[in-house]
Image (cartoon, rainbow, N blue to C red; front, side, top):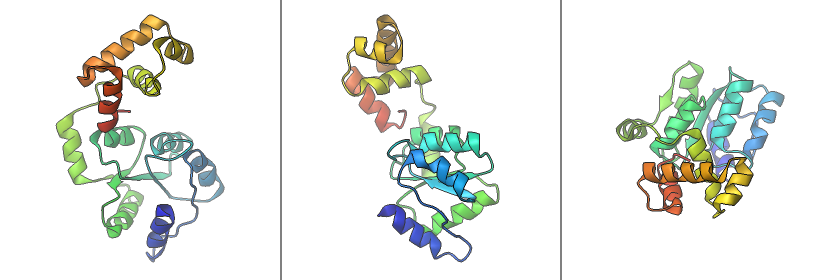
Length: 190
């Protein structure tokens, strides 16, 4: 419903045509290949593949395509990850519709567009302290898997999993892995 409403709003702009819509992140690349498109508008939370992963895939496969991330998750960590994945713009959904249309126009002119409040918060918070591997192990642990199960699933030794989790817990200032997952998610690090 939100996707269709956004498409309808953008379609009201005289210089913007909505040429494709998909409901899943893992459908984005195929749709962009099938339909000539200049800008992809993605949400962070999408079934099949996150918008951040879809943005990185689009950047690799269709580097000329501009990517705008529009999300309810206005967290500094998500902003950093979006920029690292190749997004050209990052806006929160509570912004006025006119701001979204203007962001599309600006990225087509080669500009980067970032919600200013979120940019200030990202600068104040600093970089994500977790390494890629620590994020992967922490994310995999979110379902309550044991260290042995994580080791098997991630093709790591039991001790390596324990070390990554311990380091992630320490870096997040958490008391345990469940709290580390919550803190990391709240900050947009996972």
